[in-house]
Each structure stands twice: as C-alpha cells, then as structure tokens.
Length: 278
Image (cartoon, rainbow, N blue to C red; front, top):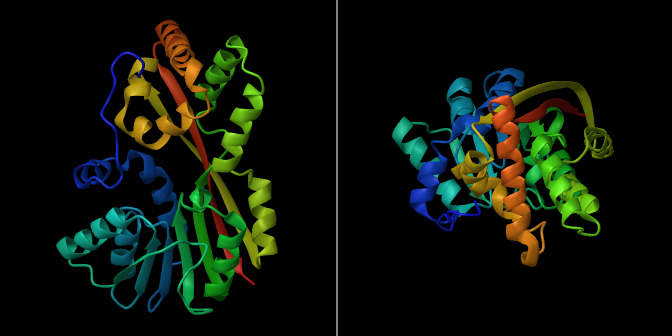
C-alpha cells in the first residue's frame, strides 16, 4: 500500500463492477447462512435490502420459484444494472430491481411477506429510519432475516492500527477507531433494542465466524477487495501528514508478526438475525 500505488477504484466503472462480481468470498458466508434461515414457501412477496450485485437475491428467486415475486432495492446504479443482466442471462423472471434507499422505500404499507438483507442493514445511512421502513412495508407475522458482521470484525488489524496511532502520538486515536467501528458495525444489543422498538420480535440470533488469511501485511493491504471495501475508510482515520508513516508502520508490524507465525489472519464474526413483525 505504501510503496506500490494502485489505480483509483470507482464503483461506477463497469469493468471494476464485473471484477467485484467475481469476489463472492466476502458475501458468500453471510449469504449461505441467510439462505438457510429463510422460511421457504410459494406465492411470497420478498424484499431484499441492499441487493448489491445480485447475491443472494437471484439465488433466492430461483429457490422460491416463479410463484414468488422478489424486489431488490439498492442506490447503486451499476449494481442494479448487473442484477438485471444476471436475470436476463439466467432466465430469472421474478425479480424487480429498484434504485433507491432503505430509509425512504417507495412501497405500500404491509406489501411484503418477507424481508431479507445480506450484510446490508449495517451499511445504511440511518439505521433507525431503515428499521421503521422495514416495519412499515412488512406484513404482520412476516419474516425479517438479515446478516451482519459484528464490531470484532478485523479486530487484529485495528489493534495494530491503534498501536501505530499511539506511537505517532495522535490524540484520541482510540476514540477515532472506536467511533469508526461503531458507525460501521453496531453492537448486537443495540440492534436488538432497535428491532424491538420498530415492531419486531427476534426469534433467533445465530453467531458464526470466518477468517481472511494472508501471507503478510503487504499482501493484505494490497488485496483488491481490501483496498476497495476498506482501504479508503482506513486511510481517512489518519491525518494526511502522518498517514504514510502510520501505514508503513502497520504494514511492517503485520509483516513481522506473519514472519513469526506463518500468516496474518483477520476474523470476521457475524450473526444471522431472524425476526418476526408483530
């Protein structure tokens, strides 16, 4: 990251979008857990929040069959285009894609029998408003099932970054990192409270975990998906005048650790939350 600059990544670049679509390793563990938790049936109206590039909505549409109608909502224009392309290629005719936000959904009250979201709820701008909207558009008794990675995600990296910020004598370094993690991944207890306040009963909460393993810190920091999904937000945590030196130290610390242990591993704990509209 510090010695070999990479090209700027844009989510509006069609070629880059196609490359992201090949990176199912991030979304698959969450999505497979979600697909296992869904209450399958016929003649269902299903909403997928944060449908991204089409996983798992395309898979779920095929599993439910053509008696069910699925709607995906996402503000990402290129992602929505990709879903439509997948539907055309796969012959899936029971998906409707809407470009929009979860905070202001253009759907009638009590329209859906089920809502799903694969690691999308924790990426919305306004969590409270999103949950209120979910409660509005879901029928009473309807299932709301979603996955989300928890605040311990990539904790191994954040601990090294905390240490590097401390060595750089950056005031409030711990708070900066803690605030960043909180904005990205809310504590599970808070999620449950907000669900209850929005008219949902949590029926089950399943904890899982997978890991990202790398040969060293250089490989991790230069990995395409790490740069795309996390790198820029990590950089913004560090003032520009010390950014290069801080990340060089982070990279070196992880490289040294990997040399001693054989690899660098970052854990991704996540939960599958199964709720009911009451």
